[in-house]
Each structure stands twice: as C-alpha cells, then as structure tokens.
Length: 146
Image (cartoon, rainbow, N blue to C red):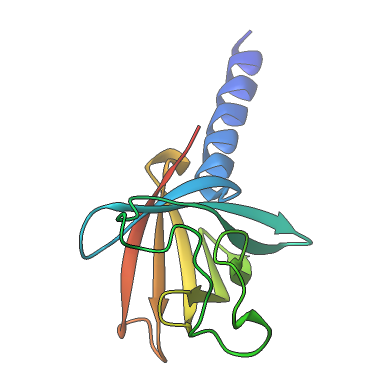
C-alpha cells in the first residue's frame, strides 16, 4: 500500500511539473502598460517548437479598425490581417522556460527575441520580449483561458 501511495504521489508531482511547463493552449494577453486585455492568442507546440497566433482582438475602441492589417510589418506579413497572424515562433523548451524564439508586435511591426515561462501552476505566462539582452525588454503576463 505504501508503494502505491508513493507511486501516485510521484506521478502527481510529475504531472504538476509538466502542467507548469505546458504553454500550449489559448491565452489572454494583458498590456503591461495599461493592464487591459489585448487579445486571445493560441500557442501550440510542433516538433518541440512553440508557435502562437492571434485569435481575437479585445477592447478595440469604436474609432479603431475592428479588423486591422499590419501596415508596419516587413516582408510577407505586410498588409496581412492581424487576426490569424502568427506572432510567436521558434521557441524551444530549456528547463522550465521556453526561449530562443521571436515575437512580433503587429502594432509597430517590430520583432523581438522572446522567452516564456509558465507560472502559477501553468495558469499564467511571463512573456518577455527584448532586444539583445533580456535586461533590455518588457514582460507581459498572459492568463490561460479555459
């Protein structure tokens, strides 16, 4: 009986750790400057690499374009609709965080290096975009949607 309890406890701890690192799912991005919800973003992992695309824009003012295109994006993304756009790519898991990827800000068309870390039992993500070194950047906290 003691062995069974030990096995179940070990499995429970292992699965909790895996959930904390599981970034796949749908997330609500929160603007780090205003604190307002900005969008719903779907993150998936394919062959060990994480990607994310915008599913929905939130809190658009009536005077703002409700279905905008990225006029500031470079290359093939220029003029493409923001909803449905892949804005996160190339992240690989490194211990308890995902790093080595890129994130696009469709508002200004700029790309940044990116790293992500799941927190609060996998219910929030710290998403850090930066230039050069991680110290030169910003972090947003995204909330998991059910």
